Picture 1: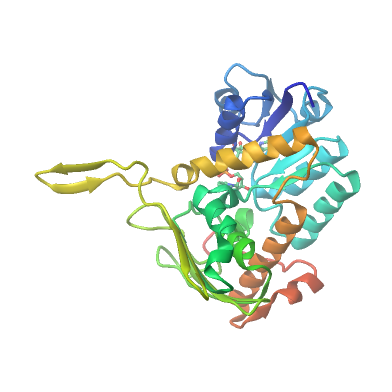
Picture 2: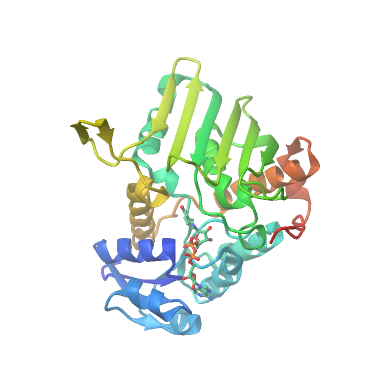
Length: 337
Ligand SMILES: NC(=O)c1ccc[n+]([C@@H]2O[C@H](COP(=O)([O-])OP(=O)(O)OC[C@H]3O[C@@H](n4cnc5c(N)ncnc54)[C@H](O)[C@@H]3O)[C@@H](O)[C@H]2O)c1
């Protein structure tokens, strides 16, 4: 493609506004439209670009080659289908849906129409992750994986699918990125912040990989100490630790002692990864190559998150293939919603 790639952002909230900012800064891209029923949010994100009132207008716009879907999760599946039918390349925030059947149907349309598709698992583009993945052979066959991620804004189960589909999904995808497919999960969780509910704010998930490796993922919606995201990979010959606690290398010494800055949230922690994933998407669409992570990773990681959700509800280990075989698990209504 010789001309600029025309992109539209659908949903200009927290993450959509960030993607719009990234697209505005990328060469080879023209931010052609931003659509959000909250017109003020759209105008803020679009700067002086076109603010569109309807999604249909975006899909009919021949200047739009690709859409970045960053609307609330429950809208992703229908917007993916409409974008694919309109022949647009699609970047979609995670998850595609928290209903397996809807995710499967939407992604079947992507496959049928052959439009480029990338899912928003930005951690794969975190510089530490990229380096670890490239050097994975150095530590030999992976034996254990340990991951910790917190905090993340609370979103009720009805709109987010619960903590595993909304939050742990990133860690699940990263675990698969390093160690391959997950065969079985066991989840426990509790709510420290409020009433006991079927959507806890703090969870621990254990994993059995098809390779024989084992792993653990710990998530908490809240922390006292800000953003805390780590991964530890232990292989036969060594170990990698991926973490970043500070935004800059600055240390301040004063009468109060020694101080360093702290990352104040996931946007800052993953700023470079968000840019990296969008650069990769744009490059793939322009070159006509397959964006990554794509349909298969979106589905595989979602199945593991749904298996974790089932494990928590049932209080037993759940094999991921149980989820593949059945329609989506209906969610119980939250008692404290
Ligand atoms: N990859 C990540 O790290 C990451 C981080 C945050 C959120 N997310 C995902 O991004 C999505 C959005 O999350 P958020 O935190 O930005 O939410 P948000 O509530 O801040 O923003 C959502 C925006 O979508 C708009 N919207 C509502 N209906 C719409 C419609 N029909 N068409 C277009 N826009 C519409 C809302 O007005 C709002 O501005 C969720 O699916 C979430 O899981 C991913």
